[in-house]
Length: 375
Length: 190
Image (cartoon, rainbow over all chains, first blue to last red; front, side):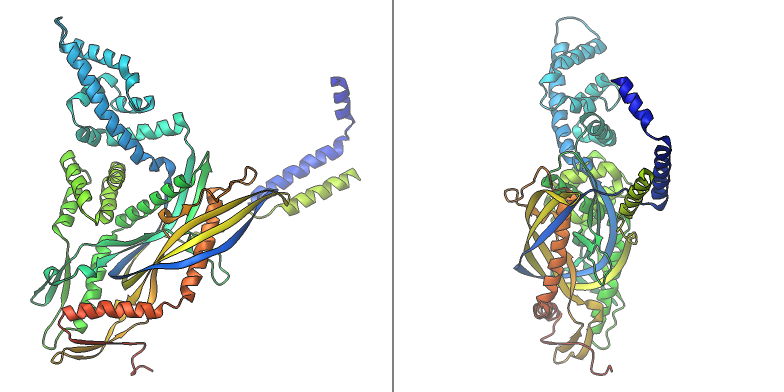
Protein backbone atom coordinates (compact mmCIF):
# COMPACT_ATOMS: atom_id res chain seq x y z
CA UNK A 1 0.00 0.00 0.00
CA UNK A 2 2.75 2.40 1.11
CA UNK A 3 4.89 1.43 -1.90
CA UNK A 4 1.98 2.14 -4.23
CA UNK A 5 1.49 5.53 -2.63
CA UNK A 6 5.19 6.40 -2.91
CA UNK A 7 5.13 5.29 -6.52
CA UNK A 8 2.21 7.59 -7.18
CA UNK A 9 4.08 10.56 -5.75
CA UNK A 10 7.13 9.77 -7.89
CA UNK A 11 4.91 9.67 -10.92
CA UNK A 12 3.94 13.34 -10.49
CA UNK A 13 6.07 15.42 -12.83
CA UNK A 14 8.46 17.44 -10.72
CA UNK A 15 8.67 20.55 -12.80
CA UNK A 16 5.02 21.68 -12.62
CA UNK A 17 4.99 20.93 -8.88
CA UNK A 18 8.04 23.11 -8.24
CA UNK A 19 6.67 25.78 -10.52
CA UNK A 20 3.35 25.72 -8.67
CA UNK A 21 5.19 26.00 -5.35
CA UNK A 22 7.23 28.91 -6.65
CA UNK A 23 4.16 30.74 -7.95
CA UNK A 24 2.35 30.11 -4.67
CA UNK A 25 5.20 31.68 -2.70
CA UNK A 26 5.35 34.65 -5.07
CA UNK A 27 1.58 35.15 -4.78
CA UNK A 28 1.63 34.96 -0.99
CA UNK A 29 4.59 37.34 -0.73
CA UNK A 30 2.92 39.77 -3.12
CA UNK A 31 -0.42 39.55 -1.23
CA UNK A 32 1.38 40.19 2.06
CA UNK A 33 3.37 43.09 0.61
CA UNK A 34 0.30 44.69 -0.96
CA UNK A 35 -1.72 44.20 2.21
CA UNK A 36 -4.23 42.00 0.44
CA UNK A 37 -6.16 39.17 2.00
CA UNK A 38 -6.91 35.71 0.70
CA UNK A 39 -10.32 35.28 -0.94
CA UNK A 40 -13.28 34.95 1.39
CA UNK A 41 -15.53 32.07 0.38
CA UNK A 42 -18.00 32.64 3.20
CA UNK A 43 -20.31 35.61 3.08
CA UNK A 44 -23.58 36.98 4.37
CA UNK A 45 -26.46 39.03 3.05
CA UNK A 46 -28.28 41.46 5.33
CA UNK A 47 -31.83 42.58 4.78
CA UNK A 48 -33.08 45.44 6.90
CA UNK A 49 -36.79 46.20 7.13
CA UNK A 50 -37.90 49.63 8.16
CA UNK A 51 -39.59 49.50 11.57
CA UNK A 52 -41.98 52.10 12.95
CA UNK A 53 -40.60 55.32 14.52
CA UNK A 54 -42.94 56.95 17.02
CA UNK A 55 -42.65 60.20 18.90
CA UNK A 56 -43.47 59.06 22.43
CA UNK A 57 -42.73 62.00 24.72
CA UNK A 58 -41.86 65.69 24.59
CA UNK A 59 -40.16 67.34 27.57
CA UNK A 60 -39.53 71.02 28.14
CA UNK A 61 -35.96 71.56 29.28
CA UNK A 62 -33.57 74.46 29.70
CA UNK A 63 -30.03 73.15 29.47
CA UNK A 64 -27.04 75.21 28.46
CA UNK A 65 -24.50 72.99 26.73
CA UNK A 66 -21.20 74.75 27.23
CA UNK A 67 -18.63 72.04 26.45
CA UNK A 68 -18.46 69.04 24.16
CA UNK A 69 -15.92 66.25 24.26
CA UNK A 70 -15.43 63.85 21.34
CA UNK A 71 -13.48 60.70 22.02
CA UNK A 72 -12.78 57.05 21.46
CA UNK A 73 -12.63 54.35 24.15
CA UNK A 74 -12.20 50.58 24.46
CA UNK A 75 -14.05 48.48 26.99
CA UNK A 76 -14.11 44.71 27.59
CA UNK A 77 -16.43 42.25 29.24
CA UNK A 78 -13.68 41.42 31.70
CA UNK A 79 -13.67 45.00 32.99
CA UNK A 80 -17.44 44.91 33.11
CA UNK A 81 -17.40 41.98 35.51
CA UNK A 82 -15.44 44.02 38.03
CA UNK A 83 -18.52 45.33 39.81
CA UNK A 84 -20.02 41.86 40.14
CA UNK A 85 -16.75 40.41 41.39
CA UNK A 86 -16.23 43.26 43.79
CA UNK A 87 -19.61 42.63 45.38
CA UNK A 88 -18.80 38.92 45.72
CA UNK A 89 -15.45 39.76 47.31
CA UNK A 90 -17.21 42.11 49.77
CA UNK A 91 -19.61 39.35 50.82
CA UNK A 92 -16.82 36.79 50.98
CA UNK A 93 -14.74 39.07 53.18
CA UNK A 94 -17.51 39.19 55.79
CA UNK A 95 -18.04 35.44 55.61
CA UNK A 96 -14.31 34.70 55.94
CA UNK A 97 -14.05 37.17 58.79
CA UNK A 98 -16.87 35.49 60.72
CA UNK A 99 -15.60 31.97 60.10
CA UNK A 100 -11.98 32.71 60.97
CA UNK A 101 -13.00 34.66 64.08
CA UNK A 102 -15.02 31.64 65.25
CA UNK A 103 -12.05 29.29 64.77
CA UNK A 104 -9.70 31.78 66.37
CA UNK A 105 -11.92 32.05 69.46
CA UNK A 106 -12.35 28.30 69.83
CA UNK A 107 -8.56 27.80 69.43
CA UNK A 108 -8.00 30.45 72.06
CA UNK A 109 -10.55 28.94 74.46
CA UNK A 110 -8.88 25.53 74.46
CA UNK A 111 -7.73 24.57 78.02
CA UNK A 112 -4.10 24.27 76.91
CA UNK A 113 -1.45 26.91 77.39
CA UNK A 114 -0.28 28.11 73.99
CA UNK A 115 1.45 31.10 72.45
CA UNK A 116 -0.46 33.56 70.24
CA UNK A 117 1.39 32.21 67.18
CA UNK A 118 0.26 28.64 68.00
CA UNK A 119 -3.35 29.81 68.43
CA UNK A 120 -3.25 31.57 65.06
CA UNK A 121 -1.74 28.54 63.36
CA UNK A 122 -4.43 26.32 64.85
CA UNK A 123 -7.17 28.75 63.76
CA UNK A 124 -5.65 28.90 60.28
CA UNK A 125 -5.59 25.10 59.94
CA UNK A 126 -9.17 24.83 61.17
CA UNK A 127 -10.22 27.50 58.67
CA UNK A 128 -8.56 25.63 55.79
CA UNK A 129 -10.33 22.41 56.75
CA UNK A 130 -13.69 24.18 56.56
CA UNK A 131 -13.02 26.58 53.67
CA UNK A 132 -15.08 24.44 51.27
CA UNK A 133 -18.23 25.45 53.17
CA UNK A 134 -17.83 29.11 52.15
CA UNK A 135 -20.48 30.27 49.69
CA UNK A 136 -18.20 31.82 47.04
CA UNK A 137 -16.17 29.74 44.55
CA UNK A 138 -12.66 28.60 45.38
CA UNK A 139 -10.91 31.03 43.05
CA UNK A 140 -12.45 33.93 44.89
CA UNK A 141 -11.04 32.62 48.14
CA UNK A 142 -7.68 32.26 46.50
CA UNK A 143 -7.81 35.87 45.27
CA UNK A 144 -8.79 37.14 48.71
CA UNK A 145 -6.27 35.12 50.68
CA UNK A 146 -3.33 35.66 48.36
CA UNK A 147 -3.56 39.38 48.23
CA UNK A 148 -0.65 39.79 50.66
CA UNK A 149 1.22 36.68 49.48
CA UNK A 150 0.72 34.99 52.87
CA UNK A 151 -2.76 33.48 53.46
CA UNK A 152 -2.27 33.08 57.25
CA UNK A 153 -1.23 36.73 57.67
CA UNK A 154 -4.03 37.81 55.35
CA UNK A 155 -6.63 35.98 57.47
CA UNK A 156 -5.28 37.74 60.53
CA UNK A 157 -5.62 41.09 58.79
CA UNK A 158 -9.17 40.24 57.74
CA UNK A 159 -10.01 39.38 61.37
CA UNK A 160 -8.70 42.65 62.72
CA UNK A 161 -9.75 45.13 60.06
CA UNK A 162 -12.83 46.38 58.21
CA UNK A 163 -13.59 45.77 54.54
CA UNK A 164 -13.30 49.49 53.86
CA UNK A 165 -9.76 49.63 55.23
CA UNK A 166 -8.75 46.27 53.71
CA UNK A 167 -10.03 47.13 50.25
CA UNK A 168 -8.53 50.61 50.35
CA UNK A 169 -5.13 49.01 51.00
CA UNK A 170 -5.43 46.03 48.64
CA UNK A 171 -8.09 47.14 46.11
CA UNK A 172 -5.81 47.24 43.13
CA UNK A 173 -4.06 43.94 43.89
CA UNK A 174 -7.42 42.23 44.38
CA UNK A 175 -8.59 43.41 40.97
CA UNK A 176 -5.31 42.37 39.31
CA UNK A 177 -5.48 38.86 40.76
CA UNK A 178 -9.14 38.60 39.83
CA UNK A 179 -8.41 39.62 36.24
CA UNK A 180 -5.68 36.96 35.97
CA UNK A 181 -7.99 34.26 37.28
CA UNK A 182 -10.84 35.24 34.98
CA UNK A 183 -8.55 35.23 31.96
CA UNK A 184 -6.14 32.38 32.62
CA UNK A 185 -8.04 29.99 34.85
CA UNK A 186 -11.70 30.40 33.92
CA UNK A 187 -11.20 31.32 30.22
CA UNK A 188 -14.36 33.45 30.12
CA UNK A 189 -16.01 34.55 26.88
CA UNK A 190 -14.27 37.56 25.48
CA UNK A 191 -15.94 40.66 24.10
CA UNK A 192 -14.13 43.90 23.46
CA UNK A 193 -15.83 46.98 22.04
CA UNK A 194 -14.48 50.20 20.66
CA UNK A 195 -16.79 53.14 21.18
CA UNK A 196 -16.70 56.61 19.59
CA UNK A 197 -18.97 59.28 20.86
CA UNK A 198 -19.41 62.58 22.60
CA UNK A 199 -20.10 63.99 26.04
CA UNK A 200 -22.12 67.17 26.45
CA UNK A 201 -21.51 69.05 29.68
CA UNK A 202 -23.33 72.13 30.85
CA UNK A 203 -25.77 73.62 33.31
CA UNK A 204 -29.42 73.17 34.03
CA UNK A 205 -30.80 76.69 33.77
CA UNK A 206 -34.21 75.56 35.01
CA UNK A 207 -32.65 75.46 38.47
CA UNK A 208 -31.70 79.10 38.25
CA UNK A 209 -33.93 81.21 40.53
CA UNK A 210 -33.40 84.20 42.82
CA UNK A 211 -31.89 81.92 45.49
CA UNK A 212 -29.07 80.92 43.19
CA UNK A 213 -28.37 84.40 41.81
CA UNK A 214 -26.38 87.12 43.53
CA UNK A 215 -25.55 90.53 42.08
CA UNK A 216 -22.39 92.07 43.54
CA UNK A 217 -21.02 95.33 42.03
CA UNK A 218 -20.33 94.61 38.36
CA UNK A 219 -20.53 90.83 38.70
CA UNK A 220 -23.29 88.29 38.73
CA UNK A 221 -22.72 85.19 40.83
CA UNK A 222 -24.63 82.05 39.93
CA UNK A 223 -24.65 78.96 42.09
CA UNK A 224 -24.93 76.03 39.73
CA UNK A 225 -23.34 72.61 39.47
CA UNK A 226 -22.19 71.22 36.14
CA UNK A 227 -24.22 68.37 34.78
CA UNK A 228 -23.67 65.74 32.10
CA UNK A 229 -26.35 66.64 29.60
CA UNK A 230 -25.65 63.67 27.35
CA UNK A 231 -23.02 60.97 27.01
CA UNK A 232 -23.73 59.32 23.75
CA UNK A 233 -22.22 56.57 21.69
CA UNK A 234 -24.64 55.94 18.87
CA UNK A 235 -24.57 53.10 16.32
CA UNK A 236 -23.10 55.68 13.90
CA UNK A 237 -20.57 58.19 15.17
CA UNK A 238 -20.99 59.87 11.81
CA UNK A 239 -23.46 58.33 9.35
CA UNK A 240 -22.45 57.96 5.70
CA UNK A 241 -23.19 61.12 3.74
CA UNK A 242 -22.35 62.64 0.36
CA UNK A 243 -20.69 59.44 -0.82
CA UNK A 244 -18.34 59.38 2.18
CA UNK A 245 -18.31 56.21 4.26
CA UNK A 246 -19.67 56.54 7.77
CA UNK A 247 -17.74 56.11 11.00
CA UNK A 248 -19.35 53.56 13.33
CA UNK A 249 -19.96 54.52 16.94
CA UNK A 250 -19.66 50.99 18.27
CA UNK A 251 -17.31 48.42 16.76
CA UNK A 252 -16.73 44.90 18.11
CA UNK A 253 -12.94 44.53 18.25
CA UNK A 254 -12.90 41.00 19.62
CA UNK A 255 -15.59 38.42 20.13
CA UNK A 256 -15.15 34.81 21.25
CA UNK A 257 -17.15 32.30 23.23
CA UNK A 258 -20.84 32.47 23.93
CA UNK A 259 -21.93 36.12 23.80
CA UNK A 260 -25.44 37.15 24.82
CA UNK A 261 -27.24 40.43 23.94
CA UNK A 262 -27.11 41.26 27.66
CA UNK A 263 -23.30 41.05 27.66
CA UNK A 264 -23.12 43.29 24.59
CA UNK A 265 -25.32 45.85 26.31
CA UNK A 266 -23.17 45.77 29.46
CA UNK A 267 -19.93 46.30 27.54
CA UNK A 268 -21.48 49.16 25.57
CA UNK A 269 -22.63 50.77 28.81
CA UNK A 270 -19.04 50.39 30.05
CA UNK A 271 -17.78 52.23 26.94
CA UNK A 272 -20.06 55.13 27.83
CA UNK A 273 -18.74 55.32 31.38
CA UNK A 274 -15.17 55.23 30.07
CA UNK A 275 -16.00 58.05 27.67
CA UNK A 276 -17.29 60.15 30.57
CA UNK A 277 -14.10 59.46 32.48
CA UNK A 278 -12.03 60.51 29.49
CA UNK A 279 -14.04 63.72 29.19
CA UNK A 280 -13.21 64.49 32.81
CA UNK A 281 -9.55 63.66 32.21
CA UNK A 282 -9.48 66.27 29.45
CA UNK A 283 -10.97 68.87 31.79
CA UNK A 284 -14.52 69.13 30.48
CA UNK A 285 -15.83 70.63 33.75
CA UNK A 286 -13.37 73.53 33.71
CA UNK A 287 -14.13 74.30 30.06
CA UNK A 288 -17.89 74.00 30.63
CA UNK A 289 -17.64 76.51 33.47
CA UNK A 290 -15.51 79.00 31.53
CA UNK A 291 -17.58 78.75 28.40
CA UNK A 292 -20.92 79.04 30.26
CA UNK A 293 -19.67 82.14 32.06
CA UNK A 294 -18.80 83.76 28.71
CA UNK A 295 -22.08 82.81 27.05
CA UNK A 296 -24.22 83.94 29.98
CA UNK A 297 -22.26 87.18 30.29
CA UNK A 298 -23.01 87.94 26.64
CA UNK A 299 -26.69 87.13 27.10
CA UNK A 300 -27.16 89.09 30.34
CA UNK A 301 -25.26 92.09 28.96
CA UNK A 302 -27.91 92.34 26.23
CA UNK A 303 -30.55 92.81 28.90
CA UNK A 304 -28.65 95.07 31.30
CA UNK A 305 -30.47 98.40 31.93
CA UNK A 306 -28.73 101.56 30.73
CA UNK A 307 -26.30 102.95 33.28
CA UNK A 308 -25.72 99.51 34.78
CA UNK A 309 -22.51 97.62 33.99
CA UNK A 310 -22.08 93.88 34.04
CA UNK A 311 -18.51 92.74 33.52
CA UNK A 312 -18.31 89.28 35.05
CA UNK A 313 -20.51 86.23 35.38
CA UNK A 314 -19.07 83.91 38.00
CA UNK A 315 -20.40 80.36 38.34
CA UNK A 316 -19.79 78.90 41.79
CA UNK A 317 -20.29 75.27 42.66
CA UNK A 318 -22.32 73.96 45.58
CA UNK A 319 -20.78 72.73 48.84
CA UNK A 320 -21.34 69.12 47.69
CA UNK A 321 -19.25 69.70 44.58
CA UNK A 322 -16.52 71.42 46.58
CA UNK A 323 -16.45 68.45 48.98
CA UNK A 324 -15.99 66.07 46.06
CA UNK A 325 -13.14 68.19 44.74
CA UNK A 326 -11.52 68.08 48.19
CA UNK A 327 -11.87 64.32 48.68
CA UNK A 328 -10.08 63.49 45.49
CA UNK A 329 -7.52 66.31 45.22
CA UNK A 330 -4.64 64.09 46.40
CA UNK A 331 -5.56 61.29 43.96
CA UNK A 332 -6.42 58.90 46.82
CA UNK A 333 -9.37 58.24 49.04
CA UNK A 334 -9.25 56.77 52.53
CA UNK A 335 -11.92 54.67 54.22
CA UNK A 336 -13.71 57.69 55.77
CA UNK A 337 -13.81 59.52 52.42
CA UNK A 338 -15.10 56.38 50.77
CA UNK A 339 -18.05 56.22 53.20
CA UNK A 340 -18.75 59.93 52.60
CA UNK A 341 -18.67 59.45 48.82
CA UNK A 342 -21.00 56.46 49.05
CA UNK A 343 -23.48 58.47 51.12
CA UNK A 344 -23.27 61.41 48.74
CA UNK A 345 -23.84 59.15 45.73
CA UNK A 346 -26.99 57.71 47.29
CA UNK A 347 -28.50 61.13 47.91
CA UNK A 348 -27.39 63.15 44.91
CA UNK A 349 -29.21 62.95 41.59
CA UNK A 350 -26.14 64.46 39.91
CA UNK A 351 -23.82 61.64 41.01
CA UNK A 352 -23.60 60.43 37.39
CA UNK A 353 -21.72 63.67 36.67
CA UNK A 354 -19.17 63.54 39.47
CA UNK A 355 -18.63 59.78 39.96
CA UNK A 356 -16.65 59.47 36.72
CA UNK A 357 -14.58 62.44 37.88
CA UNK A 358 -13.68 60.60 41.08
CA UNK A 359 -12.97 57.43 39.13
CA UNK A 360 -10.70 59.30 36.74
CA UNK A 361 -8.77 60.94 39.57
CA UNK A 362 -8.15 57.84 41.63
CA UNK A 363 -7.51 55.33 38.84
CA UNK A 364 -8.42 51.65 38.65
CA UNK A 365 -9.46 51.37 42.24
CA UNK A 366 -11.74 54.33 41.78
CA UNK A 367 -13.24 52.70 38.73
CA UNK A 368 -14.32 49.76 40.84
CA UNK A 369 -15.73 52.04 43.45
CA UNK A 370 -17.66 53.91 40.81
CA UNK A 371 -19.21 50.74 39.43
CA UNK A 372 -20.34 49.71 42.87
CA UNK A 373 -21.85 53.07 43.60
CA UNK A 374 -23.63 53.24 40.29
CA UNK A 375 -25.33 49.90 40.70
CA UNK B 1 -1.20 21.75 -20.71
CA UNK B 2 -1.17 20.94 -16.97
CA UNK B 3 1.18 23.85 -16.43
CA UNK B 4 -1.15 26.15 -18.31
CA UNK B 5 -4.10 25.04 -16.14
CA UNK B 6 -2.09 25.65 -12.99
CA UNK B 7 -1.08 29.14 -14.08
CA UNK B 8 -4.71 29.85 -14.96
CA UNK B 9 -5.84 28.62 -11.52
CA UNK B 10 -3.29 30.82 -9.76
CA UNK B 11 -4.27 33.81 -11.85
CA UNK B 12 -7.93 33.28 -10.87
CA UNK B 13 -6.91 32.97 -7.25
CA UNK B 14 -4.97 36.23 -7.49
CA UNK B 15 -7.93 37.99 -9.08
CA UNK B 16 -10.23 36.67 -6.35
CA UNK B 17 -8.04 38.33 -3.75
CA UNK B 18 -9.68 41.56 -2.65
CA UNK B 19 -8.28 44.47 -0.76
CA UNK B 20 -8.50 44.01 3.03
CA UNK B 21 -11.59 45.76 4.32
CA UNK B 22 -10.45 48.84 6.12
CA UNK B 23 -13.15 51.46 6.22
CA UNK B 24 -12.26 52.77 9.65
CA UNK B 25 -11.56 56.39 9.41
CA UNK B 26 -8.67 57.25 11.61
CA UNK B 27 -9.46 60.93 11.63
CA UNK B 28 -11.16 60.88 15.04
CA UNK B 29 -9.02 62.46 17.66
CA UNK B 30 -10.27 63.16 21.11
CA UNK B 31 -11.00 66.80 21.42
CA UNK B 32 -12.72 69.22 23.70
CA UNK B 33 -14.55 72.25 22.43
CA UNK B 34 -16.67 74.98 23.92
CA UNK B 35 -20.28 75.42 22.98
CA UNK B 36 -23.13 77.83 23.66
CA UNK B 37 -26.24 75.87 22.76
CA UNK B 38 -29.41 76.14 24.74
CA UNK B 39 -31.46 72.92 24.61
CA UNK B 40 -35.11 73.69 25.25
CA UNK B 41 -36.89 70.54 24.20
CA UNK B 42 -36.20 66.84 24.49
CA UNK B 43 -38.12 64.40 22.35
CA UNK B 44 -38.19 60.68 22.99
CA UNK B 45 -38.73 58.39 20.00
CA UNK B 46 -39.24 54.64 19.95
CA UNK B 47 -38.10 52.55 17.03
CA UNK B 48 -38.43 48.94 15.98
CA UNK B 49 -35.32 47.39 14.40
CA UNK B 50 -35.95 44.41 12.12
CA UNK B 51 -33.49 42.49 10.02
CA UNK B 52 -32.52 39.19 8.46
CA UNK B 53 -29.08 37.66 7.91
CA UNK B 54 -28.52 34.98 5.28
CA UNK B 55 -25.12 33.27 5.43
CA UNK B 56 -23.58 31.89 2.25
CA UNK B 57 -20.67 29.69 1.23
CA UNK B 58 -19.50 30.39 -2.33
CA UNK B 59 -22.76 32.27 -2.84
CA UNK B 60 -24.94 29.33 -1.78
CA UNK B 61 -27.27 30.17 1.17
CA UNK B 62 -26.65 28.02 4.24
CA UNK B 63 -29.10 29.46 6.74
CA UNK B 64 -31.09 32.53 7.82
CA UNK B 65 -31.35 34.32 11.17
CA UNK B 66 -34.02 36.84 12.11
CA UNK B 67 -33.42 39.84 14.30
CA UNK B 68 -35.97 41.98 16.11
CA UNK B 69 -35.26 44.67 18.68
CA UNK B 70 -36.74 47.83 20.09
CA UNK B 71 -34.77 50.94 20.74
CA UNK B 72 -35.22 54.48 21.93
CA UNK B 73 -33.78 57.77 20.72
CA UNK B 74 -33.53 61.02 22.65
CA UNK B 75 -33.32 64.14 20.54
CA UNK B 76 -32.49 67.49 22.09
CA UNK B 77 -33.14 70.67 20.17
CA UNK B 78 -32.84 74.38 20.80
CA UNK B 79 -30.91 77.44 19.73
CA UNK B 80 -27.41 78.90 19.89
CA UNK B 81 -27.63 81.30 22.85
CA UNK B 82 -24.60 83.30 21.71
CA UNK B 83 -26.48 84.33 18.55
CA UNK B 84 -29.47 85.84 20.35
CA UNK B 85 -29.85 89.56 19.65
CA UNK B 86 -31.99 92.28 21.18
CA UNK B 87 -34.19 93.90 18.56
CA UNK B 88 -35.66 96.46 20.94
CA UNK B 89 -35.66 96.97 24.67
CA UNK B 90 -37.64 99.38 26.82
CA UNK B 91 -36.84 99.14 30.51
CA UNK B 92 -39.57 101.63 31.49
CA UNK B 93 -42.33 99.63 29.80
CA UNK B 94 -40.56 96.34 30.62
CA UNK B 95 -40.79 95.18 27.02
CA UNK B 96 -38.23 93.32 24.98
CA UNK B 97 -38.10 91.88 21.48
CA UNK B 98 -35.46 89.20 20.97
CA UNK B 99 -34.19 88.00 17.62
CA UNK B 100 -33.47 84.30 17.87
CA UNK B 101 -31.30 82.17 15.57
CA UNK B 102 -33.05 79.32 13.74
CA UNK B 103 -33.68 76.30 15.96
CA UNK B 104 -31.61 73.17 15.37
CA UNK B 105 -31.05 69.62 16.58
CA UNK B 106 -28.38 69.76 19.29
CA UNK B 107 -27.95 66.09 20.07
CA UNK B 108 -29.31 62.73 19.05
CA UNK B 109 -28.74 59.87 21.39
CA UNK B 110 -29.62 56.21 20.85
CA UNK B 111 -28.55 54.76 24.19
CA UNK B 112 -27.16 51.23 24.10
CA UNK B 113 -29.00 50.41 27.30
CA UNK B 114 -32.31 51.13 25.56
CA UNK B 115 -31.64 48.56 22.81
CA UNK B 116 -33.77 45.57 23.77
CA UNK B 117 -33.48 42.45 21.67
CA UNK B 118 -36.74 40.52 21.42
CA UNK B 119 -35.40 37.08 22.17
CA UNK B 120 -38.60 35.32 21.16
CA UNK B 121 -38.59 36.75 17.64
CA UNK B 122 -34.80 36.68 17.19
CA UNK B 123 -34.09 33.26 15.69
CA UNK B 124 -30.42 32.35 15.66
CA UNK B 125 -29.79 29.72 12.98
CA UNK B 126 -26.89 27.31 13.65
CA UNK B 127 -25.43 27.85 10.16
CA UNK B 128 -26.01 31.59 10.26
CA UNK B 129 -25.58 32.85 13.79
CA UNK B 130 -25.86 36.55 14.62
CA UNK B 131 -22.67 38.07 15.97
CA UNK B 132 -22.45 41.34 17.87
CA UNK B 133 -21.18 42.99 14.66
CA UNK B 134 -24.24 41.72 12.75
CA UNK B 135 -26.57 43.22 15.36
CA UNK B 136 -24.62 46.47 15.18
CA UNK B 137 -25.15 46.55 11.42
CA UNK B 138 -28.91 46.50 11.95
CA UNK B 139 -28.65 49.18 14.64
CA UNK B 140 -26.59 51.35 12.29
CA UNK B 141 -29.24 51.10 9.61
CA UNK B 142 -31.90 52.00 12.19
CA UNK B 143 -29.76 54.96 13.31
CA UNK B 144 -29.40 56.31 9.76
CA UNK B 145 -33.10 55.88 9.16
CA UNK B 146 -34.03 57.56 12.41
CA UNK B 147 -31.91 60.60 11.55
CA UNK B 148 -33.67 60.89 8.19
CA UNK B 149 -37.09 60.54 9.79
CA UNK B 150 -36.34 63.18 12.44
CA UNK B 151 -35.23 65.54 9.66
CA UNK B 152 -38.46 64.83 7.73
CA UNK B 153 -40.71 65.38 10.76
CA UNK B 154 -40.36 69.17 10.56
CA UNK B 155 -40.03 69.77 14.28
CA UNK B 156 -39.13 73.44 13.86
CA UNK B 157 -42.51 74.69 15.09
CA UNK B 158 -42.34 72.59 18.24
CA UNK B 159 -38.77 73.67 19.03
CA UNK B 160 -39.64 77.35 18.48
CA UNK B 161 -42.62 77.05 20.82
CA UNK B 162 -40.59 75.42 23.61
CA UNK B 163 -37.66 77.83 23.19
CA UNK B 164 -39.95 80.83 23.42
CA UNK B 165 -41.67 79.30 26.46
CA UNK B 166 -38.37 78.81 28.28
CA UNK B 167 -37.02 82.28 27.46
CA UNK B 168 -40.32 83.92 28.38
CA UNK B 169 -40.30 82.34 31.85
CA UNK B 170 -36.63 83.22 32.27
CA UNK B 171 -37.16 86.86 31.31
CA UNK B 172 -40.32 87.23 33.38
CA UNK B 173 -38.21 86.22 36.41
CA UNK B 174 -35.85 89.04 35.41
CA UNK B 175 -38.74 91.54 35.51
CA UNK B 176 -39.90 91.82 31.89
CA UNK B 177 -43.65 92.05 31.33
CA UNK B 178 -43.94 91.81 27.57
CA UNK B 179 -41.60 89.55 25.63
CA UNK B 180 -41.74 88.92 21.88
CA UNK B 181 -39.58 86.94 19.51
CA UNK B 182 -38.45 87.22 15.92
CA UNK B 183 -36.39 84.82 13.85
CA UNK B 184 -33.90 85.06 11.06
CA UNK B 185 -31.48 87.80 10.06
CA UNK B 186 -32.02 91.36 11.27
CA UNK B 187 -33.64 93.71 8.75
CA UNK B 188 -30.53 95.87 8.62
CA UNK B 189 -28.45 93.00 7.27
CA UNK B 190 -28.38 92.54 3.49
